Length: 110
Image (cartoon, rainbow, N blue to C red; front, top):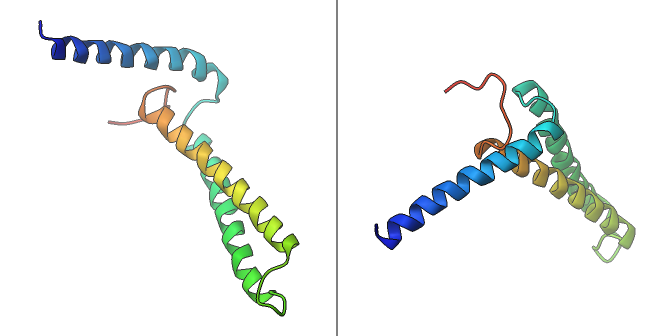
């Protein structure tokens, strides 16, 4: 057997083992995964994105005489960005877990 074939087989076995471990560990930690259970997370992420963008447009209207937002306004914008980025990270992590088969998905049709 060639080294390349051994490597491919090893990688397949490793991926299967990682999938099984993640399913065993992550699965019990989460509610049942369905469109209904995931949609509120997507809505939360959309709201965070909207709030962050809305704040940027609001800053445009409230800049000081020098044309720059105040430090307080920038701090609020940064807080909104961090909240948005955190919710986006959750969405990406959930998508990754679903794509890799780390969590069982209810009602998935092929």
